[in-house]
Amino acid sequence: MVEVPWEEVQPYLAQAARAWSEEHPVPGFRKGQAPFDIIEKRLGREALLDLALEILVSHTYLKAVTEQKLETIGQPQVEMRAKAWDLPVQYEAVVAVIPEVKLSSLEKISVARNKISVSEEEIEKLLEDLRRLRAQDCVVDEPAAKGHKVTFHYRLSQDHVALEGSPIGDTDIVLGETQVLPGFSEALIGMKAGEEKKFSVRFPDTWSRKDLAGRIVDVELKVKHVAHIDLPPLDEGFAAQLGSFKTMAELRDNMRANVKLEKEDMEERRVGSAAVEALVKMSTFGIVPDILIDAEITRIQDEIAYEVRRQGIVFEEWLKKLGKTEQDLKKELQPQAEARVKATLALRALAKSEQIVPEEKELLEEVEHILQHAGNDPVLLERVHSHAFHEYLKNQIVTRKAVEWLKKKVVRG
Image 1 (cartoon, rainbow, N blue to C red):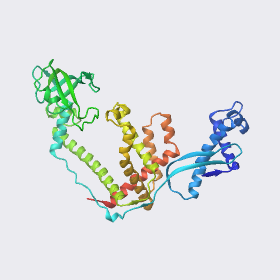
Image 2 (cartoon, one colour; image 1 turned 90 degrees about the vertical axis):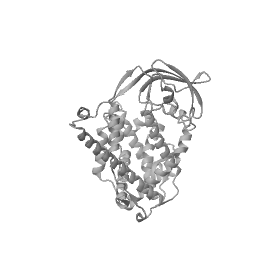
Image 3 (cartoon, rainbow, N blue to C red; image 1 turned 180 degrees about the vertical axis):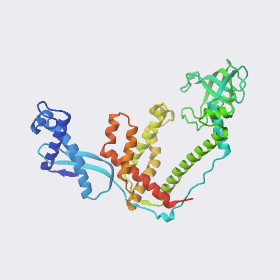
Image 4 (tube, one colour; image 1 turned 120 degrees about the vertical axis):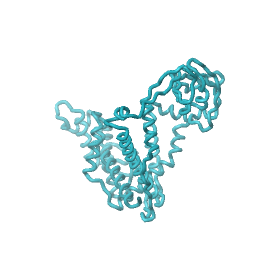
């Protein structure tokens, strides 16, 4: 509980009044220069006090935390207990206190870095994928066979009632290579354009759509056309289409170098994660506050929802198709959230013990990079320049530096 005497509240009232008059100029006065009593009358005591308390809490809370030598993380949950004109202000702030972390001896941790190699089979597969992206479909008047691309329309039903999930438009599959639903590729073999077929399929118990898993449904499909896939030859002309390559050898060398860089980047991320995971596993933690776990669960759920929406899918509909509620998802995310929180705490403790701090230059570079992609979004621009966001960036920088420091100490090879 924090109590602030009324005489200490008054300076915050004056500060709130000036800030309000900056945003809402009073006729006859310059911005921020209107007398306090006029603003008090125009705004009302209760509203003015509420504005002052926002400033007061942010200052006095930090003072209380410093005096009590608490290491906190995250934003406090503030509840006003007493607020009235001419009387002391009382509020309660609940905040997560960073639990004690005892780091393992780094001598006990060893992570092996895998050797990176690129096989000719990988390059040939990538080339084949690129050929298919530039392939031409040649419609043929012959029965569908393995390797043909078949365009068709289908409808799912059970007891003559249409089921959700049947596409409105056409569907394409390459026989023997892709599968829309169980049994479709087999059913299409031998069919020609214009032909129709009815059959039943049973969905596996592990099917991703829970509403279809284990069910037997009726299928009606009609073939629109059958096509042969004409792949372009792997020659100099093909290489030239993909950049300034004169020969296929140049193209292959470039692809090999790019794949190697990608694999090296993935390996660096892997060993970093493995090093942190080992550090967490061999360290001991005090009681981790629920507020930290809950906040991390929400953060992970927001990340998932963002990716789902990027695909043009409504998040709530995505959950429904999986047969889950938001509460189900939160429960499933609990272990992952706990692991991420402990990783953050361990890296924070490591940074503190090794005096790993962000440099001003690093912070400015981060801000500049974000501003380059911010465009003219006023909300984002305001957020980027806020003190809270700068603190967030500093934590991100420290985390990255701590991981790199840890890798140098424990990664072998």
